[in-house]
Image 1 (cartoon, rainbow, N blue to C red):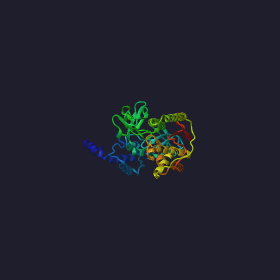
Image 2 (image 1 turned 180 degrees about the vertical axis):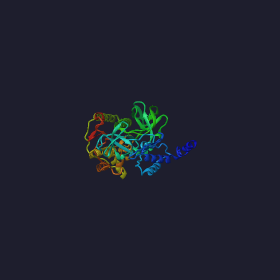
Image 3 (image 1 turned 60 degrees about the vertical axis):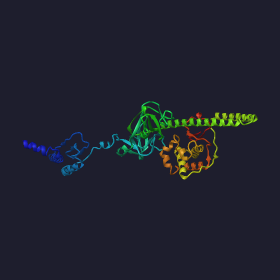
Length: 448
């Protein structure tokens, strides 16, 4: 008996002969027609089902080092004459290439992707995804995928996202630090200083990708909704690894509004400074005149002041006629650059509206306040948010459309249909009663 027990432990129960013993057991079971289960522990990560018409066998592969797919092929070949064997593997763990669960998830693979309310390119845009942003897949509808990301739910074109296993392959490449706001209405500043301009007010639980290179113990550098960056006090955020999520349109609108307000304040300050300098120059000149000239000058100043007051108090809509400005000479790349921003900002507007947008850019260029080149003006911080869109990027080499290219060419040649106006907003976004000075409305935009 002792010798028999020793033989069994050495040649039958030993793990070294697990494959051989499994085969023998299966063949035996096939012959006698009795189903058996080869037992293993529950710690393994693979499972195969062996099926025959009669009987059916299930093999738990708990030791991956001993039993793998090749071993199962041996089993199949040995008993194929007696029974039909089907091999299947549990795949749920294949998406665990990252510590984040990507079953039913997606990652955005393009620089900027619009989320639309319905599966239609003409449907309202409800949010935006940047490259590397992720979310949950809710369903498919033709060429569209319904997704949920952050607080946004809507449809995206399927061709611009990676799903499930494909998402796992690149997930670690897009893993970033995410700053989540822990207080309500936290100021985001242009620079890491309490003396710098406030460019946004972050809400409780808003999350932002972090630029680690410009982050320190006091200030966290975060990417905002329009791809620009700002600083938020480290005291009011928690930072951990994760993935960016969709940005709702409302956040973009808030950014635009705050930037517009900041710009107006700066313009007012500059105009006040220029006015003060002009008054000082005028006073110095007048002191050298005779009293007779002083009287004449005084009378003239009063008249001018009255005119200015009248002009300042008028905020009515005016009809801007077409005028001819001095032509602006640019190279081919700048021609397409102007046409691209026209297309991205007003591609759905009629020609007159696109011409007006082109002239906004050129009017800003003429002031020198936004920069001395077309590129400076178009890429000026906090101005044309459409520069971050795929529509703009795609239009850089084509001009966007024949209409946007024609509008850009006409504006560069000197055709101006908005006078000296330098700003525009959608009609639904601005209350014209708040506009100081003249404005004009062209289709869906208010120019002021």
